Image 1 (cartoon, helix red, strand yellow):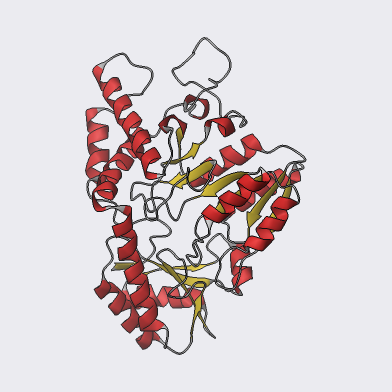
Image 2 (tube, one colour):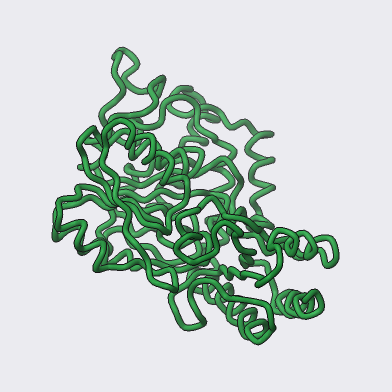
Length: 379
């Protein structure tokens, strides 16, 4: 079997992740902020250290501003629905995932004004279009760091500078880049960053979170309320981070998995992980670009991208192609619209979608060669 669906979820997970979850459960992941005994304090220390390491990974100077959730979808819902009010204006992009588009659609029904910025033929943001929307008075920008359809990496730093220039807040969906691409919230003027643990961070499903600046966190009404173990005498949620957004019991085995995955990421280095994935992407494109019946979607070899290649099989059913890849060669990919219909419309692959190949830290050059040979044979 060859797994080329890492944009959906990383497989395998980082070395040590499975062991960390097993040990957490067996040794007792005791609830934090509640128990006055050694096990609870040890778990609390692990959670504290994981926040600190995530903040460092994201170039964020306040680890208290890292809140844990189930992943990007919950994080984006909490950020947008807690921040935006009827009459507010927000801009997103055609590149964005339904994790952004659907919460915005719900808010649009409640009176929030939603605008969409466009991209060029390679899937990169049209900065002039974004600038014009910001000049017109948009208060918030929410956008992906990299397209989950074609891998186009967006100029977040340039968008951050525009947001500062026009007084808008910037919320970034880092589902495809956290752990596999350099991120610096301070440098790029990012006000909030949503991340998932199960993709580039190489941990388990069901864990993720967001990092948010203190001034923005105070403007966000918590979507969930409940016990935090702090200020239990008050009927109101605490007004400080991270307790403000962490009602109830956290996914402690998931945080233990994140901690173990960070061991691997820190030791290997994000730059090395990214360089490996990009070398796989480059070889794949070089080996397949001259095969008749294939159209490369999105960025070319020398354009900003993460470890994703999207192909449209001209005159063929893309879903059938993906099925044949698995049935005949054991190659696992992802076909369809990838929960990002506006991006497929922008790239000319709607409604047929595309077949996405996404590479991870454990994939090899030999696997890419095997896949290219299978493509030639199949077509």
